[in-house]
Image (cartoon, rainbow, N blue to C red; front, side, top):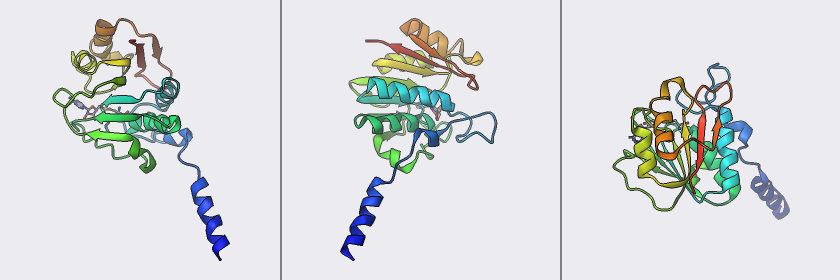
Length: 195
Ligand SMILES: C[S@@+](CC[C@H](N)C(=O)[O-])C[C@H]1O[C@@H](n2cnc3c(N)ncnc32)[C@H](O)[C@@H]1O
């Protein structure tokens, strides 16, 4: 009887966790969308995942956690890196609350339900992911308020964000080192290695 119990325990420990194939993203075709509109696309999530796996940031600050799509991709990378954490800030202007993050990834995230312009600014930010309110000056204020070694902004290529996200990004940081912009996304990620 004792032997059977031990075998069962071992099986539980070896059960694989969530894989990157499970995570998904927003998709204009509702049949392919795993996350609601406002979330990043799956291919953008994969690019974020690869970036975090490569750069191994110890502290990521995210502005705009929403229901948790981008948070989940970065949390998955943090878990696979076996080090690091995310501070995700969202004032829930759009009812965010990180509600759809897979249970096993929640532990890698500290949730701050505050306005990003009045909350405490964490020290030693390795990576900033900005995906908040895409209004004029918002991205500039965020980049200046949360100094980071790597800055990633969503919607840099969106047609409606050329005078806001893209304008602010270029103004503060200069042109991105990389622009990730692949269909079906119409948003794009801008990546800058600041130092
Ligand atoms: C486009 S959604 C973020 C999507 C998310 N990155 C994802 O992929 O799932 C923008 C989020 O920014 C948040 N937001 C807007 N203004 C903010 C502010 N001043 N401080 C903190 N969060 C803010 C909104 O509540 C919203 O949840």
